[in-house]
Length: 202
Image (tube, rainbow, N blue to C red; front, side):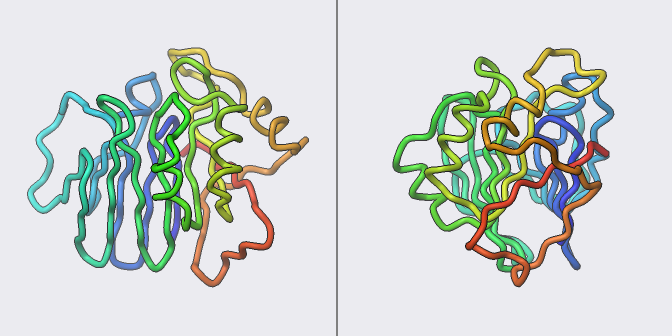
């Protein structure tokens, strides 16, 4: 599978036969280009005013519950009044997606994400999103093999966030080379060493 980032909490996960779009409005809401809405599955982590009538055949997920379509399994868990976090299983890879939360997770939520391979987590603001310090607390509790940070300062953002380097310093990394896409297979994942992947915004 491939994972692409459009800024903020907006991502696309593409496998051989299916594509999953996460929070498509997130990037556009803060002045970034964002993705088009062509996808098999679209997942919203918070309640959104729908700006478009989606094409027939798109599988929409916008809240807690258990979902399954085309061999993709999605489990949504309510964490705040209008926010949902997700466990997404695709091609045997388990992805924890925290959207745009700004509070630490309760123990019961940590336990639901205990067995994930990859964690997508906001890191850039203590009021709007998780701070670097609080994101690290969650990472240490869940211990995923791979971490993708999101929701940090980028050019052209309408809001001001903390830079990525604040999170990297918290992790203990001085420098990291971003990639355009993350290519990932279950066989690539090792639990022996946790890795940080920084994606270039598409």
